[in-house]
Image (cartoon, rainbow, N blue to C red; front, side, top):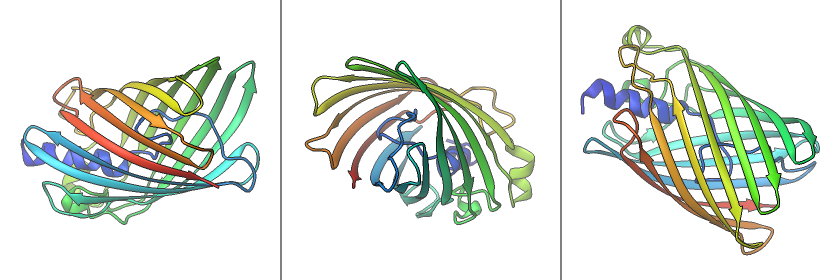
Length: 245
């Protein structure tokens, strides 16, 4: 894989908006509720064109009101073609502004810091932002979720300014099926604009996973994500732990 493609791949991972319910990429409209907390710790191993990376993410979420969450997200590259290091940490919110007859809608703004190293493709070097519209619909054991988002990235390196897009859209959809109160089967598909200006291939993926919730406090998950074209990571395996309190 070319060095520029490798950097673009890592950069997308470094500035990708934080999402709930790992291993899914698509977020749901669920919020914690006033005074409740959530800790998410997950790690993913990805491979693309012979290059491997290992990325971990820590996310803390606090329920400010019954409809509003605030969160902090910290990604870290444990291993990548360009070395290890922190990605761009972020702060954000989720506002669930509509819910009726099983349908709910939410807005999710997110603001990225400059903690990632732009020389390694693990950050942009300048603050950036993202905004997503989330939709969820629940009926019986089934739940469907859809996201449409836009990321606005600013770059410190002149090379990145010339070769990377500053505005990138993404869209995805997911479904959950609850086998019982403890087990959920999940699936997810999505596509996004390529970070490289010269590349018109849109990274696309499909994902399957399972979430086990032995009690109201703990969720454990595992998922497998496959790239549907060469612009996306060929394969990715992830595991995660989520605590609610």
